[in-house]
Image (cartoon, rainbow, N blue to C red; front, side, top):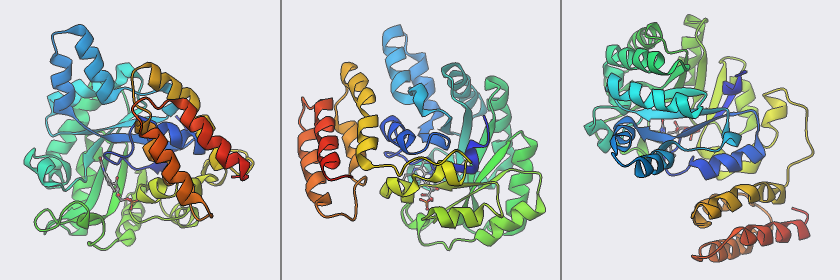
Length: 337
Ligand SMILES: Cc1cc2nc3c(=O)[nH]c(=O)nc-3n(C[C@H](O)[C@H](O)[C@H](O)COP(=O)(O)O)c2cc1C
């Protein structure tokens, strides 16, 4: 894989599912995409299913993807090297490009499972997990983490964490440039209240120039990303990609050095989804699972709200099929969008 990580779309539970990833592929061919976090234990349970058909269906639901989504990283949640190794091995068989370990999620549920951001307090365990996943899969293993948690928020503690997990074999770090308060703030507050400290991520890159560092948190535009790329190796964007997907249509030209294309139209994105929608329908899936991700595609133009409302109404019907998307694309084309 070339340097797809120079721009990546952050893992987001309930958002970066396979349908959104296929949508993103209409916008950027070259960026690295991440799955939502998948808990290693859930993969283990599915893999234990004695019925081969049901096992295959459960694994497909958890870690299935379409090759068009590549380059694609599977994000795993867990703290048990053996379970993570099993999940990583299955991911390698399926053709994922890399595995990422979640050491950034502050949710109560995740913390009760003793993984996510609380693992920042146990870098040795993270290193053991990274090593086990690397051995089992032969894939590059990366870690997504915070700059600190609770009172463990000194720069020295961050360096200790980074040095330990890279010694364990982590080949890249995606650093969410905020600490997380595990006591007192919920996950949403933990994405807004602790201040962004890009300076610490820059310092990390200066102090460990051989490491590959991605900066994450609060990036809203391509221009902001280009500024950060002068200081770090990659940028990872979450909410601003989901909420304004078309804003990123020149990412391939601006960041991945691909030839520039014609300005991308919303209708082209919708049309690009049709083959996926057909396959999804044939496999028994509901159109809404795809269409729900289109609500932010058209913004800031008269009639956008009407287009969204009609799409939501039609795509929400139980028997809705790809023809709904075809109609939605035609409506956009009629308006030159
Ligand atoms: C709805 C939502 C779900 C998220 N789910 C995950 C997740 O599954 N794994 C993870 O590492 N981070 C998750 N995050 C955090 C993002 O990956 C990212 O670190 C955070 O949103 C900051 O980046 P941004 O400001 O560009 O959105 C989630 C964020 C949001 C908004």
